[in-house]
Length: 335
Image (tube, rainbow, N blue to C red):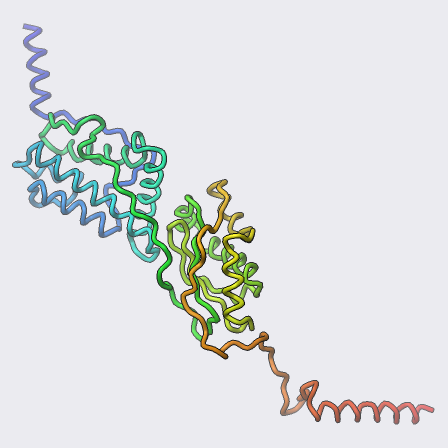
């Protein structure tokens, strides 16, 4: 009788679908909810795929999918994970509400591609989300393969985008001698873009000014996006340096040791040595003759009370002569 009672209890637990213990990874890529619309869209698509009604939360909607089978859930989960992995594309758009999530997924995907998918953040995050979703289901015997291999697969890593067109907006009344893009190679820029964007931008601005041999105030960073770090910037025409000269200096970025300030900021998240390995892209230049050969200076006041004539003007010479005469007269009177 005791054996029968125990057997009945085991059977009851199996029928009831006892929840599995889901191991949450130290870094979980896929939260329960997110401000990223693409994340919500992946969840809604999954719930629709399994036939859930009245629930678009991927973590719980299997409870509302009475017709779901192991085969249909396997297919829908695999599609959902590919959908989530594709959010990495938003890592190139810092103004998107999906930027932070996309950056995290992109960094995790690159790491998995480099070090292996097994036990990676991507695999563990997928397994956790799958386990959480299945705990809402009465399907207790679905087999997703070793380490959930049939639903948690290594996504193909999209190549990092090459600089193509300028992004961001120049300040009002800013006349650009050149607008350009360059890529600084580094694997940990996502953290800085999220947590210290302004500090990183300031450091890059200082380094670019040194590379181009102009004042820091004549450099404007219009945008920075992940991949490794693509920087779009403009150099002011007020610097008084011809676009051809600026471009020639810019092209030394692949050989010059110039990333001192940027390296300092980057060292707070990684000890990797930064470098520029591909030629910067010149996106636009000022019209011929638009840049003077020397930086403009503020002209002195030439009219009104207290006016000071320009140093090389005829009136300046007259003032100088009169001053000399007055000095001589004063000396004679003193005698």
